[in-house]
Image (tube, rainbow, N blue to C red; front, side, top):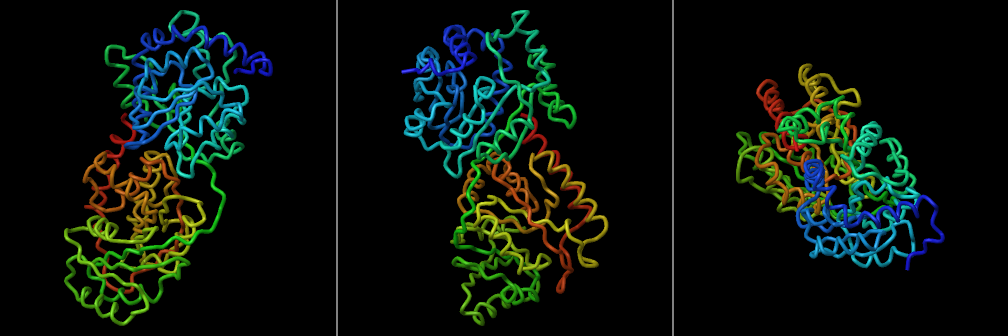
Length: 483
């Protein structure tokens, strides 16, 4: 039973408005169908395959029914909205519940766990946003992602004008108009860790196709995107730092690196959990394979695995080794050892302590040894890092550092989503970076002191690979921004 007597006057007005408009909501969605379908397209872009979803404030169930999810659950404060939603979305479980009432949490939680929790415009309706989000936090598993979508605060006068002329449903109570900084603050206060933010729809109408073209190609651009109507935030529950001892597999791709095989064993960090070192050799013209066999026999106390990669390129070698590896954590250590093997414990600790879920090395924070990186390479890397930070909505200072670290469970998700991007990556780095960004993993960079080679020569062609990076930028823009 609803306890309306303890509600604020505003909440009572909001409830009465929603109850009265339950039967009419479908008409307003139909009247602005292009806008709603564009909003839906981005939410479906965020969701992963075969996921479970909780839609908080599901209204009449239109959005819930259109989401690409295997398991669907919706809640709404309004009994009338719940009745309509059950008819619109019979495949979902829809219950009457108040996210601001702690007494309702158990009946919501009983339908979990949830991979994603969506609050589509729900923050505008809540009486106490901090309280509501703190209850959302209690519904989260460690790997749940919370998606918060809302109107851009700058659009308030335009939307109010739309209500006056009958183009938008009139709200008979005071909505909460909050900025991106407000959302960040509310998340921090409620135990949620903000991961990414994005915006879409500079024009909420098709306009004979012109609005659609502007939304696809113009709306994602820097500066313009700050003016977009729809704003989205993806967050995860803030995790209490607790040292675990996950096992680890360190993958060392090797091609013409015979002089670096033994130093990798000698210099590699000691890890708290079980450890295996996997060399994957890729058609070397020196004696790298023979040296791997010698080192494996000489260091019997270290669990060393020797593999011959089946194809060509670093990406092929890493994927092959990852699929043979047994560790909870998967690490890449480039065979040139320009990233110090001693530093791998720093990457391990980020995951073991729950600080992040995907770790990328950065060679461009600290000063580096003379001749470690050529002049043009250095500035090209800095430029591309800024571009990719914009494309991926998370901070990157060095996308081409070969050291990448992730949990096995997340690698398997990246692999299952690989069809979204295809076999596009000539480097082997962007498979993981793009995959982690698409899954909204918490990405952390660990700065390392980049060393000059002590054996062999670089296998990077600055102009050929620079052109490939330009292609990668275009590819990422089309896949991650043009939605």
